[in-house]
Structures are given as structure tokens and as C-alpha cells.
Image (cartoon, rainbow, N blue to C red):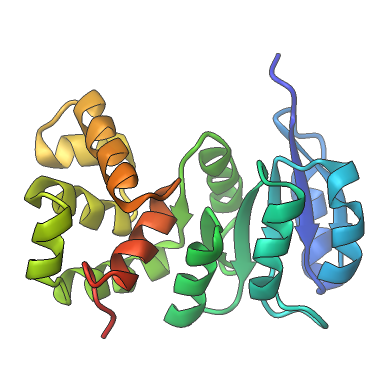
Length: 216
């Protein structure tokens, strides 16, 4: 049996924390090893708690979630970070993924969506709330800068990066483009290498900042 995924929650709403705690009770695949109301307190325990994934709110008393991301990555570099917030601001999404978050979910997400997102991220993927994926994808696709994109990424790589921004998984991209999953995986690896990034959210943010995609 695989060891349980170790989760840390940083959330100031006691009611919401209780909801997460209840959702994690008796699960065989993951456990909430620690929960905190502020980043400052959480940072003291992260190294000891050694979470596989940190669920992080943005709007916190004291240090904000956005300010906390690089500090969390420094203390537990292998831990994934999933933002769990009410903020649907494009600037927050882009800053979070640009700072190293592997996922961004709204608190309106169901517990089933949250659980699936945690599993997906811990398996090496990335997750973006469906309510945000559409406008992020539209922003990137509509403002495509052809000269910059052609200089770095191929047409097929741009196609795949756009589908990643839309929230599609590798298998879905393969079906959409009529390619094998292995081929899609190779394209994605090439995209990451060209952009010098570790994951999908960082690739989207880097492409945006380099002018491959431009924000409205």
C-alpha cells in the first residue's frame, strides 16, 4: 500500500478548516498532518511536518498567501502548493503560478474536485479551477504574439501549450490532436526545456511574461 499523501492546510477560516478536516477523515490515500490560521505560524512547523502538498489561502491575516509561496518552496522545496481561495482575479492566478504554485482552485469547488485536484498535482500534474481556465486560456490564445512565439516554440508546441492553459490533461490533449500520449509527453518536455520551467503553470506564466502570450 502506498503511504498516505501528507497535507498541510493554511487557512484562517475555522469553519472552512473544519470542512477540510472532515473531508480528510478516514481517507486511506491522504491525511491532513497540520493546519494553521496564519503563514507565520505555519512556517515554523513546515520542515518538521514535511507535507507532500500545502493547501494555501491567499487572503490571510499578516503575511498573504502570495507572499508565502516562495518561503514555503524554500523550506519544503519538494512540496506542491495548491491555492485554495475566493479570489478569481487574473493577476492573483498569474502571480501564484508564476511563484511556483502547482494548482489554483476556488473555494466554491466541491470536496470531490479538491480531492481529485490534490491527487492530480501530487502525481506530477497541475490543476486550474474550471471557472478560471476558460478566461486564462482566452487571454493567452487571443493575445498570441506570432513573432515571439515562432522564435521559440513550434506551432505544435504552441497548440499544446494553449490546450494545457485550457486545463486539458495529457491524455485529453492526445485525443484532441490525434497524437499518442507519449508524443504529447515529449512535446510538453520540450516546451518545459525551452522555457526552462518545471511545470505547466510555470510554463503558462513564462510564456505570458516573455510575450509568447500577452495579457489583455
